[in-house]
Every structure is written in C-alpha cells, then in structure tokens.
Length: 383
Image 1 (cartoon, one colour):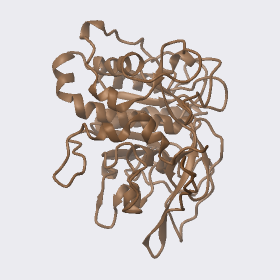
Image 2 (cartoon, one colour):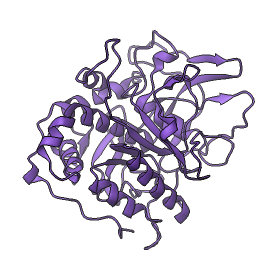
Image 3 (cartoon, helix red, strand yellow):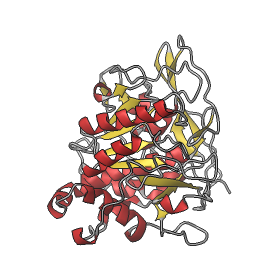
Image 4 (tube, one colour):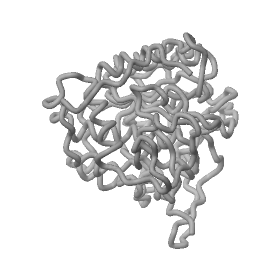
C-alpha cells in the first residue's frame, strides 16, 4: 500500500491546526506580524507562492538578503554546482499553496500557506563544509532577527568542524535565542551523526520519519539532540521555477541534509487513485511543477511552519507568561518533546522526543515559567 500524496499533512494535523488560527474575511489565514526567516539557496518565482505578476506573493523578498554576494537580491540563479532550487523546495513545504496551480487541489502542499517568509540566500550547497559557509549562515541569522523573524528555518548542516571554525554560527544562535527567536534546524542524513546547527543546544533539532511513522534516518551519534521528528520521505514539494532562457544546473542528490527526486509529481494514493503531474503556465517563458523529495530538510520545514503557527496562536499568552525571551524557545521545545506529540514507531527514544502534531501543540497549556531552564550556550560548541 502506498501513502496518500498528502500523508505528511495528515500526519502532523496541518488542516486541524490551520482551523485554530485567525482568518481574514476571504478565508485566508491572518498571520499578523509573524515572519519566518528562511536560510537556504534563495527562492524562485514559483506560482505556488502567490501572484508574482500582481506583486502579491507572500514571500517577503524585499526584507531578504544574499549573503553570498552581499546584495538585497536573494533570488536563486540556479546556475551553479551544488543544490540549485533547494530553497524553493523547502519553502514550498513551509508556505506553498498548490491551489495556485490547480484550484481543485485541496492538499495545499505547504503546512502554512500564505505565511510571510523572508528568504535569505546564503549557500550554493546544503553542506556547510567550509568556515565561510558557516559564517554566511551566522550573518543570515543576525539579519533574520533584525528583520523581525520570530522563527528561522535552516535546512543546512555539517556534522562536525574544527574547534574555533564555526564562523560565528554558534554565537549567532546564542544571540537569536536570547531574543526569543526559535531556530529550527535539520538533523541531516549523509552520515550517522546529527549536523550543526541542528546539533546546537539552543536550536530545535529535527529528525525525519516515513509515512509509517518510523525513523527515516537513524543516528548513532547525537540522537539525543533531536527534539522532534517530522515527515521526511517522499514529501510533495514545488520543483524549481525555471524560465526557458535561464541556465539551470541539476542538484547534487543525497547531500546532507537534503536530497531530491527530480521529475514531475506521480503519486499513488492509499485508495489506489493515481495522482497526475501538475504544471502551470505562468507566462510564455516559464512554468511551475510539483515533485516529490526526501530529506530532513523537509522535516525542518514542517517544524518551522508549526513554530510560526504556535506563535500566532499563543503570542499574547507567551508575552504574559514569560519575562525572559528565551523562555519562549524552551516552552516550544518542552511542548514538542513531552506534552503534545505522538510516539514515533519503534523503540523509545533516549530523550523522549516525539512526532510533530501541530494541532495538539497549538491547544496545549503553556508550561510554567519556573519549570524552564536556559539551554547551554553554543558559542564554543564544536565536535
């Protein structure tokens, strides 16, 4: 039996969670002042993110930044070796709306369609193998905080680096944490060790599960640093948006923490119906497609969207209950790990981490401030 094409949305309770959020008169979600910073390869003008021609996309591109070229243009040029288009795919899981491609498609793709996301282009490859790559992430974290992002999503990583060679990434995590910003980061999957920045104490580390609720990528080292597990295998995503005149190179498959299954969508639902390929003609020179992809990159996107929904739902209560901004992060972590989520199939996990269940998260009582303790600083952490 194959999974439904929207299995990931059903598993995390996305639709039930959206019903708990305020709406505009036209039925779209009212996000208030919530913004998510998205650190990746940048964005492409895919129609799944709204009406670009009418300047009505919900991606806050004017607030983003390109830390590679030090410019305000975070668009992904797709013309480099590495993981071109990775940013578009992860973005689509956070906030894409498939109804922009097909009005009859009710599965939406994104956990939080219409959520304002600020894109940052800081890498060509999802593997943060050099100190300059980690430095670019540090710069983007600070810029995302300055742009008013209450959540930062990082589907990038490196399992280890020499002491003193973090590029300031740990320091940037510490600064964001003390401001109450929830940083969600991928666990990775190339080797059996969790990656930085997901391995940092003050981020929310994300592991992946299959549609059968089993761990998709297990870890021999660092599993205790995974705070939550979310869908990571065969997740429906937006493919890269490429103009006919653009030079685009294919992504490297299997990189940590994101892999890609190229091609248009062809899913099998659990009732035997075959899904068709979805495309749209946005102009005479471009089109948007859907595909399936796997990686802890997509688990991270699910959790980042959930964090934004939680802040929107509980924002006033958080301000009243917690005097210290970092307590918001620890309250979120506590609820993910101990109060709201379903169990992952298999043996009990060493730190009690569980499966993301968003509607339960949004309805759960907040933990008492006195029960929360700050996580250890990350400035000097390296392995």
